[in-house]
Amino acid sequence: MQSRSADMDFYYGTALTRLERWSEAETAFQTGFQLAPVDPRFPIELAGVAFRQKHYSQAAHLLREAIKLAPNDTYANDFLGTIYFLQENREASLKYWNRVGKPKIAELREDPSPRVYPALLDRAFAMSPASTLLLSEFLDTDARIRGLGIFPRYQFDLRARDDGKFDLVFRSRERNGFGDSKWEDLFLFLRGLPFQGVQPEFYNLHHEAINFVSLFRWDPQKRRIFAQLSGPFEHSAKYRYEVVTDLRNENWALRNSFTGPAPTLGRLNMRREALALDLASHASGRLRWSAGAEASHRDFRSVVPGTVLTPDTLAEGFQLKQQAQVTGTLWRVPERRFTLDAEASSQAARLWSHHQETFEKLVGSLGWQWFPQAEGDDYEMQQRVRAGKTFGPVPFDELFMLGLERDNDLSMRAHIGTRDGRKGSAPLGRDYFLASWETDKNVYGNGLVTLKLGPFLDIGKITDSSTALGSHKWLWDAGTQAKLSIFGRIVALSYGKDLRSGNNAFYVKLLQ
Image 1 (cartoon, one colour):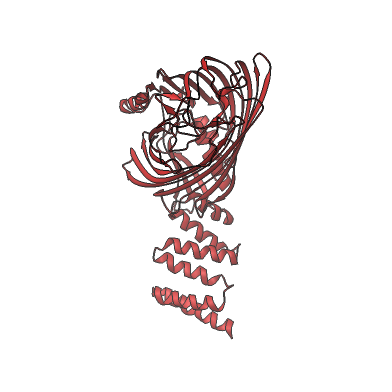
Image 2 (cartoon, helix red, strand yellow):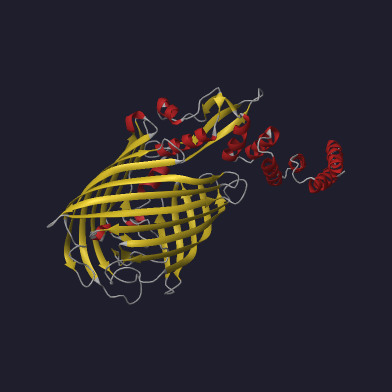
């Protein structure tokens, strides 16, 4: 009797949908669903009612419930894939369409046509025409396109055809030469001028995605010349080589704070020259790796050791280092627009000084990114947890630092790493833990300039065998941050407050 009553509710609700009496139809289907909670027909029909009223998120939720009851239901999977397609969530759309053998790709096109060598771009595409576009192929292609380093903005559009198939259109903005206009050329070259530097860059040399990035900084306290040349290895979009040279001449004054009374604990001038070669894989969207070697030389002058700088820390001479890194996606939930990534890296080095020394650095991180809304990037939330540990006697320039500094990526955003222009006012040490959380909200965008605002929270601690180094306590920094994107480059303006000391920090940093 209960099953017959549920069936009658189903037929009654179906009749009401044909009359477009959506509210009454929804009531009928909900009543039937309560009587037959394992019958997938009811959430499917309720999703249809929500869809006809353009309540796409509600429809998607109901279809996911239906698929839990009937994972192989062709109609439900196809319907759910279509909803995500309308919401421009391509990963989720492909996830469910792939279960029913969709979408069939008829043609691959570029709009506009990039200047990069066509054969190289073809090798970046893991999919092919006249076949089904798989989610794994889409992710692999995305990783290879990103790895070329010449497309700051791009997207893949699926365009439906009358024959039920799709055209896949690659839409992009490409970097070529010094920039696409004289204004972009000037901005990219001079964006480091407020920090006493210039950053010449040249992209897509000979239309082969060969890129040159450099930095010339004449700040008398931290001079630096950096140059990086990268390109596809053996004309493949799957692998890239990278050659880096880095020359530094820096004055350091070690203190416990960037403001207020903070006596100098030690000071030195460091000169370091390095040449590195690296090979990276972008073949897969789920797993990426790189491996390489670095040869360097360091020496220290004008040393005032104080209680901080030990003979092991001030070891000079030539160094040979091998380094490896692996990054993988542990969990991807395209329906929720959520990804969880992990990264691990290792550096093992031998230093030829007055006595041979070896050391190793291990670093690991775990981070997630989430777009809370079903469509667009109006809100974005991300968190990253990192930890590093060293083994053996570590030279001064290989210590970790927690703080804001232009050459450092371990940002505690209420701890500035320089004072009077000299590095050394942020905590240094051999081992660290850092957790960073932030949320971004789009507040303005016109296609050329984008402005995002949001709060952040940084929690960190750094330790060392020397009691004069390290943070000694857990650090807590909170504040707000603005990200201004111009010509594909991001400038971050942050205000942070040290919740332990009460110090305030205003900082401007080029993120990329």
